[in-house]
Image (cartoon, rainbow, N blue to C red):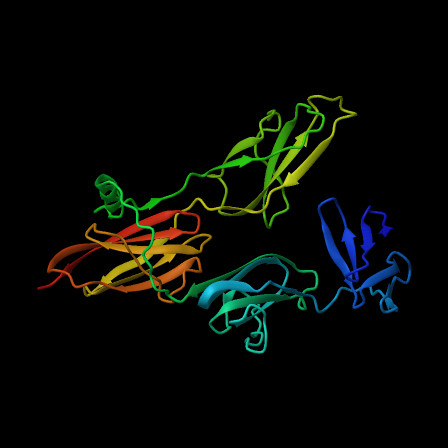
Length: 375
């Protein structure tokens, strides 16, 4: 082991041939990974850093420059059925390239496709339809890049429906369900979830002191922490309700500071803090644009959301049951989706088509268009 001037620990192991960098009680990273199994000795802080290994015996000179061939590879992802792959998106700091491969065995073998050409920005996956898929990120454009999250959308093949475990309920319950599934003749233009976010946390308090909490937040891409409440307010409960209505949609982190200042003199008081995982704030309903009915036979338009993706689309004729439909590309995987849907044969006269859109956060918007069918 070695300890540098910033209290960072470097520790070698005897089984995987790795040296770990440990910067806190909860943060560590693989710093060096050699071919041999046992790290026998090392000096990373001297003028000429080196690593000695056994099994086999080797000497490595450690370069100060970052690796140019860093690769992160996901585990094999199981879609359960043969699936087509949609949009691959990620959140990262810096420039990365992404590749995918797919196959129908749990472990990649010769039957799998080769790694696809690289994506430098989010886009459709280029690997063949299959049950399994794997993703990898290449850091060669920017060795200092940080990968935060990856999402891959997919569409499984339609499977045969099987009826099982039938339950019989009272007729009144069945009637209520049917009514909930119907579209009102005049729908509200939008409905959104509550902008109130309840935050709760737990604390290990060995002295059983009375604690005071201070909360702050920041955008995932902005380093400025902002107070969630008046700093003079004394918070004692391990929960807080955050009204997010006044902040833009996006990903945010919450920092909770715990202090025992209420039970100790200033010289002896102790503080600690923890940051939450990124939280998606999405208070705005999607919009339905360019909705129109063409010759009384089909309708088209597009759904647009601030954050996305669009999660569900449905339509209803003359206030009847909502009928789900897919966008033009068959994938609900982006914040803007175009749609074009054929209408059933209708009686002559005036009609209303209503379209309902829901985003991934559960915000809903509706729009209607009046049209006539000739005799």
